[in-house]
Length: 377
Image: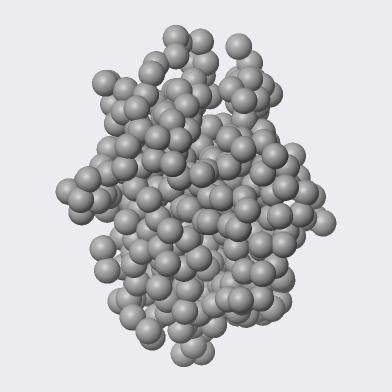
């Protein structure tokens, strides 16, 4: 069997397509399970994802989406996943299993989705499409298997469907040696020249500082769309209130010049948001911020660090890509890009799904933007 095309860290999803299919059941979580949601999600076979967390659920629920708490079981293990649900006139309901389902093996995806479809039917929920994006490493074989399971490729949604992953399980000095000499030298020079990283408390002050830096970066480079301050404030507050969110800043001439927000969720850390001023004088300051965050994430028990978004591996050196500069910085810490399979649709209502593809999604996305000023997904 061919190896996956890309992978910064070993990933069990790259193998094991040949096991016999296991049957799953699907149900909505109990009140007790919802109360202890993060404990269950981080015990998932692949460790869950911060976009399946209780904090993220509070951000999305009522903000254009209804959150449902899904439990998939097969007698050997349970997988806890968020469903984001939207209801549309004529079409019915769309279910979006954001960054899920989390499965012990890729060939569990098909029976998991069969169980989801049966749940939707038994509850008479009129679901026309179930959208998924499991963290399965992309390969020709993976795509063929998902297609054979009846799934239809859809446009990717999340920024880290291609990403740089760094293994941080080793001791600090070994992790430092594992990054590129360019990044390592930048860290050491910044330290020698007295650049200092401050970890700051959550609150409106930190939120305003980071958002201003993010605005500065977007205005200068136009790399990624920026949601409203209220959205980010709610997002950051949700994770920080649970001890899962951390702010890191460096200053130049008494003002914030580089900032980062990093999440620890289970054994995984994610560099979620960041920004900087332009034409800075301190060499290596952005590398030092990341190194300080990595060290803190190690202290919190994380063994993997997701830099959260790069161009695909095939386009990592393409200077015309809008994320080229971001990808260049992130791959200075880890040489390879991991491409995941991205988004797929399980079609439950073929006619309604065609309406969705042939203009329905575009119209509803436009209406959502006009109504709220925010992004659809």
